[in-house]
Image (cartoon, rainbow, N blue to C red; front, side, top):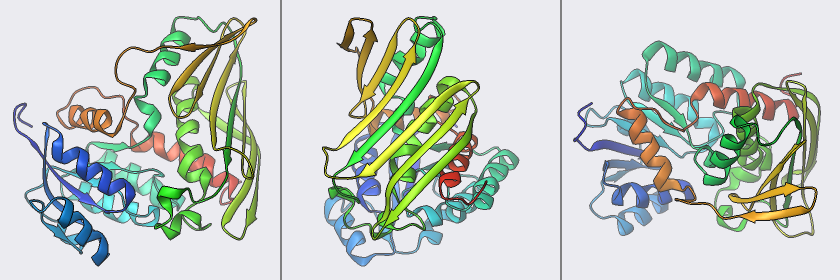
Length: 318
């Protein structure tokens, strides 16, 4: 598309993530928010109050078929991703979707197949795709600074699930669409896949409580590199930790983007230059993809690999 023309964007889903992206896209110089949609009357009213200039409707199908859109951002519950994304791609629109790609593996495969067949620009909003800490670890691995990669540890603790900002999204707690494996672990599995290559599950286990997943553990392999995952909803501080162990140097990313460098003397916090990475920077990356430029964003094919790993924990594949 023309380099200087704004990208005309529609947003499907006006919950926590959709509302945040609406705020960001409204301010973003590359985008014009043309239309937003959510089946909830309350969500539509909130969006209209915050952005009275943006038409808000309740039928997503009307938005997906709109001739005046170049791209669609999908922030609706995961079970709707495939239907909305496929319809948008077949209508000639670029698609930027929240993770997970889907919850049904056949639907995830269909999304990848349609993206390939139509040539539509497609991307998933994995937050670690452009985090400065993740990019720094990638550069260190390419430069051989870690030495031999010996293993990866992924660890989470949640004092409550869903988290406070997700309390209005009831599906986040449920086994059918939600849980911290889809909502959180997928980001870190994506990062590991990007940095180390294809991951295969060896053993996975999930314990379910009254509010969905209560604990999960897994051993996976990225080539010959063991990847160990553990997470639980427990009486502990909220923790997000990804650690890559190397023979020469090790790297830890915690709190979604703080980088620590490890050696035999201990861990040192690394001060990073440039933006940390945010919805705004990832929207900029999506604009680059729509304009035919290289982008750091994950595509649907990467999202499918992550989906296959996550659903292995749920025993939907073996």
